[in-house]
Image (cartoon, rainbow, N blue to C red; front, side):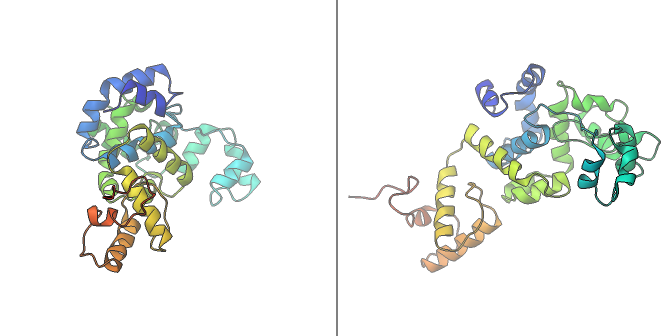
Length: 273
């Protein structure tokens, strides 16, 4: 599903231990998580991994912040310099402050013990327990396993299944997927950049045709989203209007729609002489 050359193209700075373990287990784990069924699932998954782990280079949450940075990242929790100072450059204190008493972290030290780890930053005792059960790993007892090269991909696939993320992929909702993973839309632009890399690394038939139709929809004022090759809600809404304006019956991206593409577009079908 992902060759060594494709992996190197997508994650060129990944440590060797993560590279070899990822490639050895990817095919089986991707099938278990249903990522093999549709191209968008694989692309969305790899893009989110790329962003959350900085290209598989960061597998444990950095909780060492200056007081000023704490005020920027958690303004509600640290509204003043005086409030932020006790947790500045103090990862354990910070973890207890932001994670303690929630997400199943009901014991002293749980906030730090169950801090973000792995390719998708698994966080909180409840999550470690649930994903551990799915991945067949004792993550609640040994949370450090989530960041290990041998288990990081299994944990990421477990997170994917636990959060039921494939429907977002099937709907082409990359933004909604990002919100489901992150809890907000932090780093959305970088996530889309990773998506473009994943699509370029693992191309699939029809990608350029979708992009061409998105360009046509945008030119006609029917679409204002990204030219990303994803048939999401906005693309489909614009496509429905395009079909109606062209006198076509309701439907999807078919030959009749492709025939509407400008002749100079590389994705347009060849015209008879």
